[in-house]
Image 1: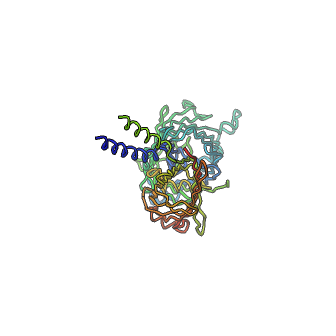
Image 2 (image 1 turned 90 degrees about the vertical axis):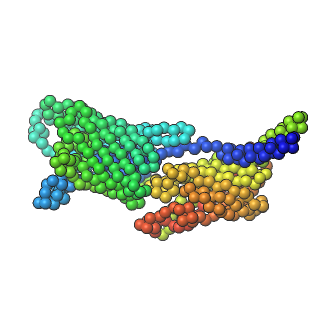
Image 3 (image 1 turned 135 degrees about the vertical axis):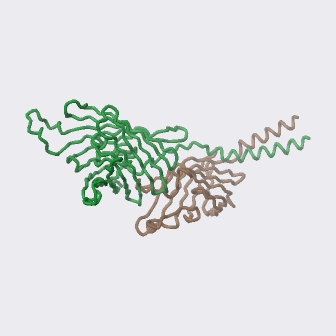
Length: 283
Length: 171
């Protein structure tokens, strides 16, 4: 009996020793969840992705005319709007950007701040939280500029967003984007502050191709149509191509959230693309 | 009964006295030379344990701890090649052969979820309270089912040189 006990004890001891070796390594892994979205934009709206530290991102956004403009306009391809943008990663959690849209000849300057990144492990956090602020300056000339009361700041408007995103699994990411847009000048009876909430998602089909969708719901003033966009992201190394269909032709927050007039049901659908190229400046 | 207690104590003691060495700051780097771009990355948060009695050696690392000179390379490494979401860890578990200047470690190397039996040559140096392990070896991407799309074939070499530098402390 004693012998059996001894044998059993010996077995236990050796097993314990082997387990111990692996246990010593511990499982103190804390992974940051990266690549919630492929690009810094889902379609028109910002994603929680920032340009990496020391990287310069050149973004060309292009929207053709509406599909329902007929064969005479080659279903919108004869007309186009464009936005050029440059974004630079100051460090791992701040990026700054500058852009110019042909729509109302608008310049935008923006900053994006990563507050918390999603992570799992010991110090797990279920979401990525990003703050985004942008200033828009309209260069387009309009009649009010002749008025005596006109000041330069009449040309300006602002957008602030609190982006909350979660990568549900390696393929599916979702985002909620509460947004406020402030206009310095509005026509009578319209609010200066416009609230909306954006919903975005992307689903990866392969490691390089994903489908994206995005919409914004206007909360306090819904005189215009809510924008809805669907697209495909194709990544080819240094470039990301985003092809999409949207009922909004504009490419900055004030315009695409609150100044969309086209309806999907009426065929006011704009084909467009974003092309981004990353240049690594810092060594 | 006394005997049993003595034996239990004996095992307990040998267990504590087992010559085990540990680090959580070993360094593993890799390098590949390709016509357009050399690719390199380093991971300085590698865990390693060595048991001098059983000659068992274990390495473990998080794929996402590899740091690249270009952030975009790092993103592609995690997202497209190593798929660190699905396969967050890589490990080696094996037995060290005769200890001298040039030793051989035989065991299982698991990368990208694919285990392979490997034999790695290196050196193991023992001092009073530590063990220093150095090794350099070549791995083939296709052995670990790491796919390179045809478009970027010329950017990435099929073979990668891996270098290990570890200093394990007695525990």
